[in-house]
Structures are given as structure tokens and as C-alpha cells.
Image (tube, rainbow, N blue to C red):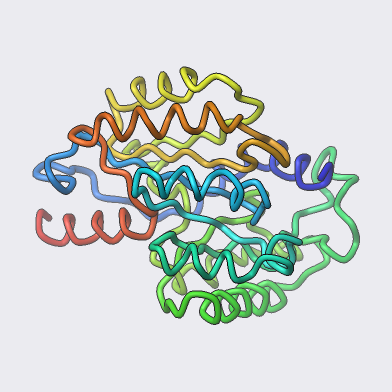
Length: 268
């Protein structure tokens, strides 16, 4: 638990840096762009690392409101090994299973990365090693959900394997990389942690809705595990979004990004 908590705390801002560097120039104007049913803003609710609390709390809460979330699975996680059929059922119900690699490798050479074990040290990996891990993760996920299109969240935001950029060699395998629209100003991204008050989540959505077209909320634990938001706070957010369906379009990240691509194809 401590290992993964450190990974996410130290790697989140590196993820945003990765997005800025790796993402090609996006459309300069979104004049004429529209979300389904006239919604003002799209909301992507995503959940990293394949945690027990996501199965126990997040998915049931999403299902109560018929919302579809995106679950970025670290495939070596205990909750994959012991609860695989529950993930398969979530996918059958319309939730997205995204690629978050097999072992969540990160760079041990960066400051405060003493917790990265040698077997998961991205500095010791080759680009080919990471290509194989990402492709194998996609194969595993296909066996779970039967899907052939997918999105990807880069562990720790670390792009370099053995000093070389591996992300650019695998990005063509995906519909989108999580957070890729942040650099253009089209989207925002926040990974809330240690949040017990749903008002903080709602306030973030309302604030970002003034200037963004897409709001990404990236959760880890929900009512348990690490980097958690409380179950009550999560449910309060979902109820708010359900009460404002005319304003917010909540869907999986892959569906949102497919819609973005389709809209831009017709308006540019």
C-alpha cells in the first residue's frame, strides 16, 4: 500500500508534464463543438490501480446512477487475481477497462523513489520491455472484456524506459492517453486524495466548468485503500452530477475521446 501511495503522490505532476510534452498539437479552435444532448461539460470519472474499494464502493455507486467509469487496471494487483469475474461483469455493464500496465513500473532514479523495487525499475527497462508489457496488458484486457479499442494511463507519468521515450512507441495502440487534452486547455485533471467532503469535489467541477469542456477526476481508493476519497464524498458527487444531467455528460473516457474525434472531424 505504501509503495503505490508513494508512486501516485510523486508521479501525478509528472503525468501532467508528460501530457504537455508528448501530446501533439490539438485543434486550436473548437467553435461548433458540442457534447451530446446539449451538455455544457463532459465528465470523465476514472479509477487507477485496480483496487478492492473500487469494486466494493465505486462501481455500485456508479451503477445506481447509470454512470460509466473508466478503470485503469494494474494487472498484477490482488483485486485482479482474486476478483477477476467482478471486473469482467463491470465491463459487461459498460464500464471501461483501461491499460495501466502489468506491474506499474516507475523510475527509481528520480528523487524520493527509494520505494521502487529493482524488478519494477523503469530505468533498467528497455523500450522493447515496455512495449511488450503494454501489449501484453492489452491482450489480458481483451480476454477480460473482448474490446479491441482502449485508452492508457502512464504509471507515475514516467515516459522513459532506460533513458528512451517508450510512450511514443505505444501511443498508436490507443484511442487516447488519459489527460492528453490538458495541455491544450480543453480539459482539466485532478486526482483527489484524502477527501472526505463531497463539497470539495463538487466545487472543483463547478469551478472548472467555467473554462473547460472536459473535466477529468482521477480516483484511487473510494471508501478504502489509499489516496482515498470517502464513500460519502464520492456518492455526494455522483448525486450532484445526476441532478444536473442537463449540464454534465458523464461517460467513460474512451467514449468521450471518440466523441471529441468525431466532432473535430466534422467541424474542422
